[in-house]
Image (cartoon, rainbow, N blue to C red; front, side):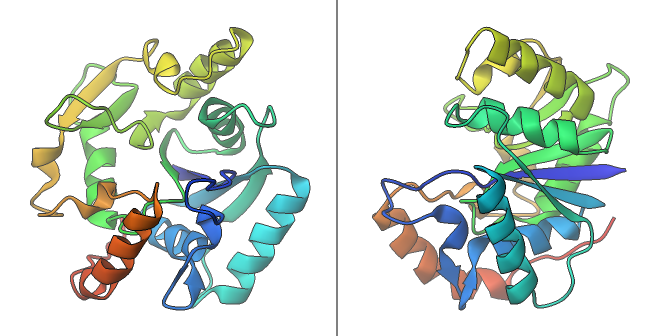
Length: 223
């Protein structure tokens, strides 16, 4: 069984709007994200800020769904305002798959074939990898576009929380990580748009320009 965890609790202060609710083609981004992930995994766990936020996101996904997205469930941050480590901890605890893809809700061009390949790569050798982490040419890790061994990542996040460690890279230090150079993913996503995230208003403007063309070349797969 495969899971996916979406961290949806961010406020999007620099964007001036909540990222999960940004609209593309008249639908909130959280809906597109959940539906794309449902093509690759058996369940999608959405991590909200709190109970009321979870209820709101559930209502939005239900109301704006183009088609039923099976296996979408909701939880909330373990520690309010603590950032992605707390969100990952909550998501990994709620998920049931042996492996889970983790992402934010600010990547409008998530590519199902890229995610599928990461699930394959984490299991491709016999070393017992705990994560398949894409690495950019400058050495930057993509910890929120990554497949984790769920139980190992949950334990690592819990220990990070005990140390009051907020850096998302902290739990990775305890895992056996397989580094995946992003060029290995270009056959599925030539321009690596799957990693395009929304941090600024300029990013959002660019994403809305790219959106129509990206949909023409969107690869949808089912494991």
